[in-house]
Length: 264
Image (cartoon, rainbow, N blue to C red):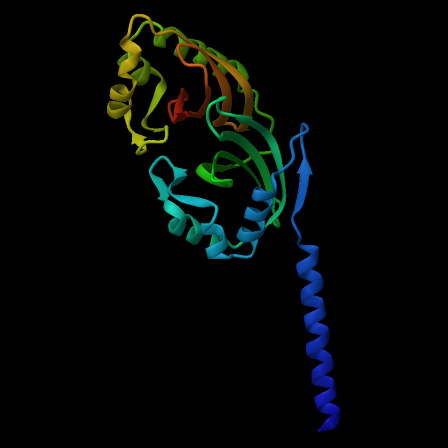
């Protein structure tokens, strides 16, 4: 009996050591890309997601936080978003920040694009809007899509569409702008209740009817996520001088349209 007990203790002890070694070996690798480091807050977010720690994940979101899953699916608030991540089966193996920039000089808002890889080798591009309040950093808006490793040269197509956006915008016709260049279920985010659909966006953009309104979009960072999706962060110049976010999607008819639009 004593021999059996010693054997059991040895097996349990060995198993625990192996578990701890495996846990240590799965530590997320934080990479530096283009001189941008993942912030300590985001590193802690990764730890919380990998640990499936619902309460810890909640701490990174506000009641008004939004996570877009698809055109027809979104999550709102800390509880829904944390539950989503807690149910994810794959942990994040490595993560890097591709680009981060302040939305404008007057606000504590950052726009960021990150790339992360899961344990199975899948890669994802994540677009985030961060805000700082009372010294704490929160995720206000988030969209993630899987990256295709194939090379996609979408820049020329998006440049043509962006130039058309600028041209129509400066004719002071928001109805034509939205109907021409936006998806039917397009999403607009600007620290207000989320705006979805063309009709509401046309109403939101009614200020463009002002004859003195002028705007040019200058891209700062573009990422072709796959053959049908491009992330863009850029600088507005003209009547409004903050940064903007556009997520372009090639739809079933082969036409590129704006899926997500945001400016703060």
